[in-house]
Length: 146
Image 1 (cartoon, rainbow, N blue to C red):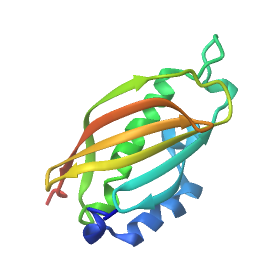
Image 2 (cartoon, rainbow, N blue to C red):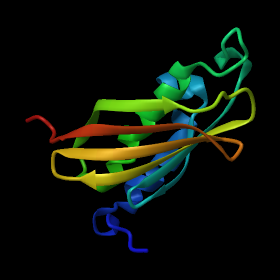
Image 3 (cartoon, rainbow, N blue to C red):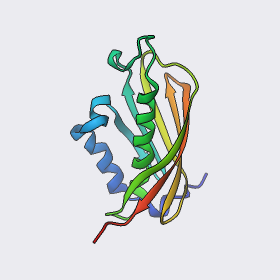
Image 4 (cartoon, rainbow, N blue to C red):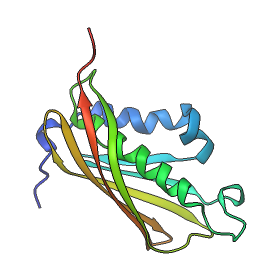
């Protein structure tokens, strides 16, 4: 199968995402979300399911899964964009399919379509090899100001 984004893939930017795992800040740091693989139009991130991320019913809060999807939705675009450009989530839809209670949560983001100004990304979220959420969203791509 051909890789539709191979011609615009910046391997150095992709490697930078992996190296940045040791310097995470903000919400990705709090969640323990680590990018483990980046390819032309694909990105995989993983995190451990922790007690403090569960609801009183002992299932992972949907907001955590939403935050994971939002994060990878933009990150997957950077190795395909010109350096200096930035991406902002415009919208995304999330279907929560099954409860998450333990183990590892893995999000696989795939760029479906990308133009100069917009990208559409699909995200599959799995927990211990079981599909637990699907998301699809749009990212706006902007050139740097000035």
